[in-house]
Image 1 (tube, helix red, strand yellow):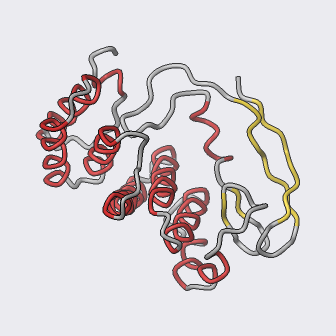
Image 2 (tube, helix red, strand yellow):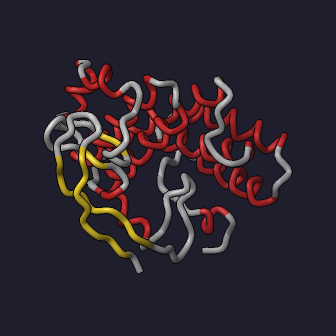
Length: 220
């Protein structure tokens, strides 16, 4: 089961207090999506993965901690516009604002994940164009992370499999296919190869849908 509880937080940016829900514990049952989104019950905890100060608009996974570039970034037009973007769910905007701060300080992996989390929010809200935008941003940030020597997953083969899925679901089929075929040539892990083989079939069909690891491996 999932346990959550309210906590009063002091914003590290403006110093004012607000109440937020934090996760005490959770669990999962079933297979994750190909982009690693967990199954329930953890799946439903996403509203509590990012906190937004209702006073100044600072966004972080923990408002008690001030990210180095926050002050400068929060005064930018891009951040202020993203905070109130009407075409996206409020929670997605919070994740994207966090992504903007993280990218500004060169943390491209974390920025990419925050953008991907925004895409998951848009999926749940059936905001298809928003999900597409968020995944395109996530793909770009993940590519920048890899180019700068940052890992986007714990292992290189898992990083390739994740990026292939984000590219496929953001309709970047040629790039996804190229990376997929390269991964099939260089990786020996049977699970990764199974996932990439499944991805290749989806890409060839130009299928941008959501699938689980179990479906990819024929276990669902």
